Image (cartoon, rainbow, N blue to C red; front, side, top):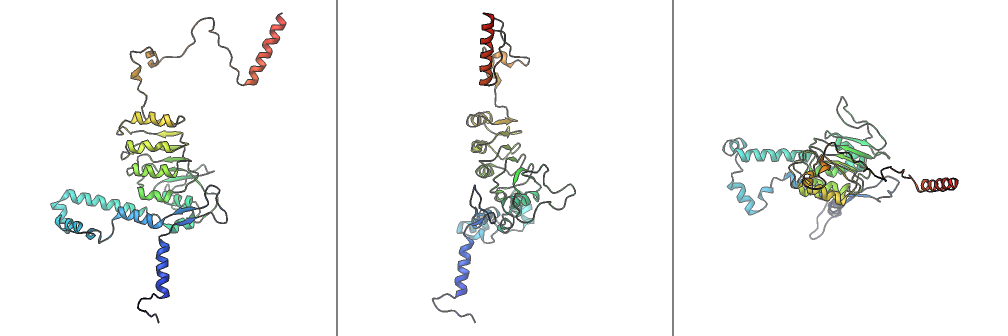
Length: 334
């Protein structure tokens, strides 16, 4: 029989209170029986992730009554009215609420699941999540893409942790990934290729998240047609230290796009930007270098005593051999 004492807790109450405290702690996933060289463990904060998701869901029934002004606003705007009546009297607000509820359902479908992480590990967790979100992935050492569709009803990848399955490329073009969904794509230490073109929900918040996750490994990034992304999202691309190719097609809505491209090239000289016109050749008009704008322009050597092209040695050793041959030829001539 469980008894209660005034001013004292039972052992069950203490255990329950300790369990609630542990729920707020971070969880860690480490490779079984082996420590990673790059990181000893991967850490996540489930309580923080759930709180972040709840901000977008706003699923609490009493959220609208959390304060006096919120309660007054609820009754003053007649939000208690049935939806059919609101659709007739206030169609604009009805459509806004409808879109908000659709987005909330989308966020809830991409929620982070700690149980899946603990069972699969970071890479396989991301693979299962992305493939069920109409995306595809390619693992390190594999040539084919892993995806659902084309008659495939099941994924041909492990459903528990297996060493050696590392995601190297992600194709999420035209997907409906949201900010909260990127929590399922963390700690991908071997990711080099990322295609997020024409993602309708990809904005500067999502860019900030991936720039923090894949800053050291990403080599290819495609964000073409992401119309929610503006100049403040593009300027942080400098964080990708090893980025080699950046695709920016259909991004004419971005303010000062040529200037941003030039600034990125100043920070990342080896970067190749595709799809953005950042070189204004009209600046050459009326100058001594206007001939460079001609389509049939081909650089040529000017005529003169130095017109003959000398062979450039490919290595210092070749240069020494040429010097020896030249000296021997001169000695023979003498």
